[in-house]
Image (cartoon, rainbow, N blue to C red; front, side):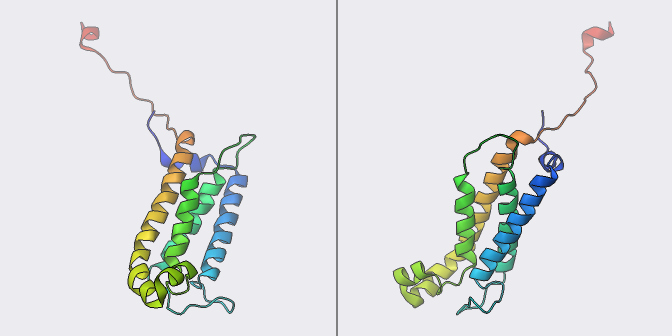
Length: 160
């Protein structure tokens, strides 16, 4: 049977969509506020967010919400997919301020964080989003099927 990616989403219950939306919103706020991609009075940045930080934040939130919703099943237990967790963490590092990242700051200093860590952040975003998408695809694999009815094929022998 061919795979149709949207069939899994079309069959989701309202409960799954509610979980997906709630987790996406919480992820958006938690990552966006703590990295100050969403301006707020509690967290600040020494360096303005990159032009792509909001897009990565939105994509990370959406993928995290969808991935989390795949764990909402009736009576089945599933182990947590570490690819998704790692992907969300890499996306978090990607959108954060390079000199506000304490690990980068301790390891590289402020100049090193700007010189070495900041140029790597777009790649962290790509890897993080790819891991989230991969984890989602793997989780959805068992839910995606299409039923295509093809007409029977006539053989040369049946025409005689």
